[in-house]
Length: 401
Image: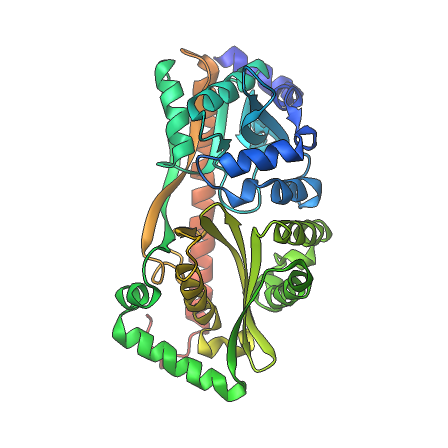
């Protein structure tokens, strides 16, 4: 194993071989891709072709993805698709493995045909082997989702077991429930009363309205409103707003109108009179919604505009018979959405072996564990510094919590 590690370190470019042997993402027929998405056993709005192709074209740090495709053995029909990049490109680890291409949204569950999920999963893994990969690293996958279950069954038949590298519980919405019952159960009478009071105060700036832009002629202006709101807040101050980077701005301005053409994207906006105070982008795939991003006008922060928008989105989705669930696509313990959307599902990063008794797998696993530990240590330091700064800025007559 030491020899393998030394060779990989001496020749890091060889770690790119697996990705180079894959199919370029742009080579996948868009019509086949769209048809597969319609038949997918598990929805993933971030791997819809209009979205992922736009990401791969220009999004900062996410361009030029490759793909593992799976085709029906008796026809040219696409039955599986997994966008990927090399482990070297993803994490600068010089080992022959492939990593799920990050589609900007935090979900990388591959598309598998519901009519042949096991065959699709089997062929995807075989494609990875033939490309020279020794392992797959799937980031941000639904651990108990249908796609992961199909992959797990194929691995079990081959005497292999996936290894969960990290996981957390993510907020989701059961959109089959009646909205007011759901919100009352989640927030309680006292909190809802306080939010209604804040909404009434917001109405002092003009009638509060909730708008949904769906049509292609509506979506462009609504997107620009969202981008302005996002850049006006803390994301703009940190330099992470979409519009602040040419590649990201190009991606979102391409993806959103393209998905609106197929009724798979909408932009929600909360206004006080003519003033937009909050806006969000929502993707739709099959019967599931994906809450991509939220932007607010921080001048109205005292009225909780993000929460007010999320309450309206909850009502909007629960009233739609085509929707059964919504993925918050938020991180663990998200302070805004977790108290409102009380559903939970496990999301995580998974290492998938491709060969039995493969010494390279241990190297990949060890490198990933070490990297995760380093990242967690760095996050702990950052949290400590931020907490200290917040405490130092807090007025002395206020309690510490």
